[in-house]
Length: 84
Image (cartoon, rainbow, N blue to C red; front, side):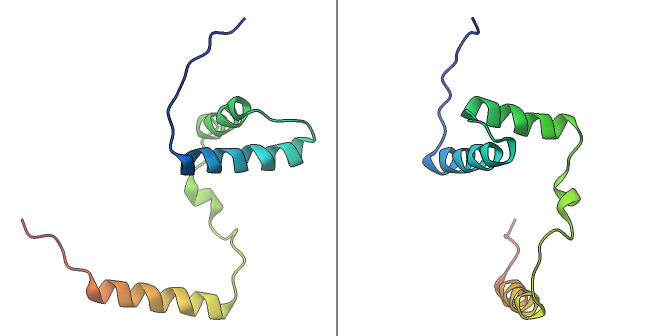
């Protein structure tokens, strides 16, 4: 029998983890526990998967790109470095 541990996580993290478990369940076609979802995420790191591997995977329109760029430009206008 494996030993269990209790880990406190926020409601938002729990919801995200549950969503990942649901996506895995659809892909694997069997029930997926939160433990299995965590092991999957840890496995991604050990296989060297990086956030940059997702580059180009987001399908957006030119209008959405323009909106994002405009939003970023506006945010950079208001940003000020912290005073030291």
